Length: 68
Image 1 (spheres, rainbow, N blue to C red):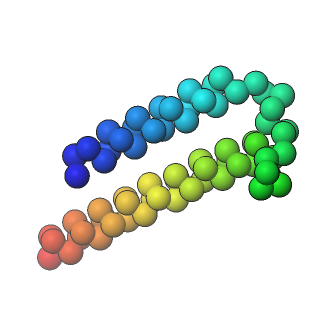
Image 2 (image 1 turned 90 degrees about the vertical axis):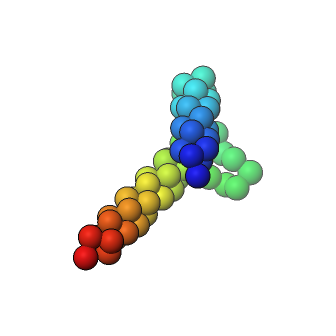
């Protein structure tokens, strides 16, 4: 379990670096899926935020159940 948070941090850092290196003119490029690059990146960020919220909720529920 301990390796998972470091893996997530590592992958997040890679994504941040890839976005930093991306030429801003390419944000309007259309991907094979039909989405723009900017929209795809925004979707990735929202997806990660969704899962972070899920994890926080599970942690809170677990804590609350174990305190009673």
